[in-house]
Image (tube, rainbow, N blue to C red; front, side, top):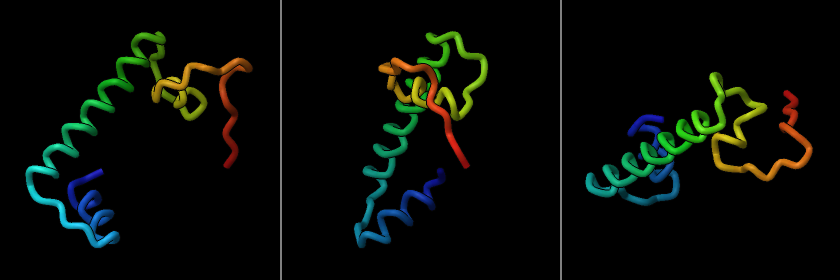
Length: 71
C-alpha cells in the first residue's frame, strides 16, 4: 500500500490527511506489519500462506485447525 493508495481512500470519503497524520498512519502500518512478522517467527512459520494468515494477524483461537480458503 502506497501513500497514494492511502490518500485515495481518504479522498473517497472526502477527508483531507495532513503530512503529520500521514506519517502517523505509515508508522501504525509499519508496527502492525512488524507484529505480524513477529507472530510468524514466534509460531515458527517459514512461509506465510493464506491458510495461516489468521495466525499472523493474531487470531490464535482456532480449535479446528487452519481455515480453508476458496477462490
